[in-house]
Image 1: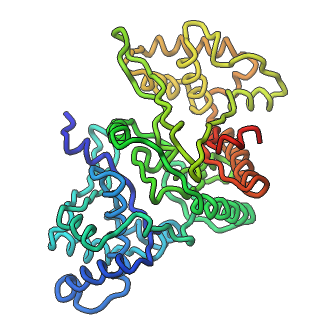
Image 2 (image 1 turned 60 degrees about the horizontal axis):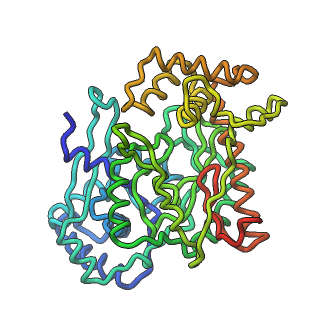
Image 3 (image 1 turned 180 degrees about the vertical axis):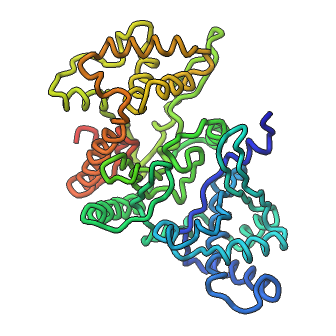
Length: 426
């Protein structure tokens, strides 16, 4: 049985090594604590150790400000901080400073709680990184030194073009014309996003309820930090490419608005159903109300278009035995999966509360094939990653045109966009 501590530790945000601040208040706090390390974890002055301490303190403050129940996730693997990942983690945090000096010192001073990571091959079949969180003593110091969220920023040197291998691990790469152009364009987009005031206009009680909902969300396999919400430091975007290829995936991640849940499960007449939350309607840009616009059935339309075929009706409807929600889920899993068993299992997992059997899921798969015979060669090919690359290129161009032609920003959610209402037509 999974205990409550483990479930609480799952609610965590990855260490952001690119967090920085030039605020005198932050510098004073860092200097104060750094002095307490001398003669203990540090025998001599160390610029690298002080820099690592500053980054950790900024992260702990950011996490606490986002949600007091949120943990900071970090790696204790020495190889993670080596030259192989230097492009992604930068030079502000080193293994020797963080693991052998800063964390032991913060523990000695009783400023953090720390939980070791572990490999759980039996129940979850995966590894869990270590977690830390600020203790009341450190939170009191944040208040004493009058830290404010606006004092934090993300370094302009942060790598925003991410390449992952087939195992979803960070992969080193050499720049080429595509990566240089993609980085230049995304940095241009991020500068404008950082300059904009993007807010979630919710009463305190509604915000507290939202935080509770987010802690219960199942993680998105594609997202790095799917369940936290930081309006203060999560406005910049990054692009993640998959399977060691610059033409697979490439979608944009990192904006806090992407993590706001669209729906929640409720029990109505004894049946568990997903109902819209419409929380994104409360997002404002520079104080103006917004609308969310999307491309309907984008990936099926792309597949039909690439096959030289038209698609006149809703591709997720008129599938025998399935309503639209089930039809959409299964269609996309059949496009994204590499074989029928993978699609079958993913579909059953999506609706696990309904107790769908493997045989029933297989019958549903056959119904989707029958509904779409002219494109069945695209099922079970992993073609979804290629479609994501296409829609990421569209999203890239939409954001650039919004900035350069209409002098506004739009917020991407993969194949939909949040924009100021007056720009809806454009």
